[in-house]
Image (cartoon, rainbow, N blue to C red):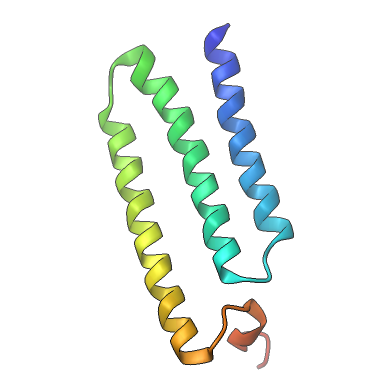
Length: 98
């Protein structure tokens, strides 16, 4: 019973990240923060599933490494975007024009 409530908490964190991604997509920094919330929900769920009950922490470490790589790549792209365009609006990327 405890495992079910812990996994539901991880799912809740993940769904909050999806809701933030759907409604706060105007700035790229908000998108990156929602991706971090999604990674936090995944790490929490895998840690409680694999780490506490099976004592297998290597899968959690792999997911943390991917989360750190995603965060560093996103921040570096955000800095280069701000230097080239002057802001972090999604609409300033000009991807919508053909």
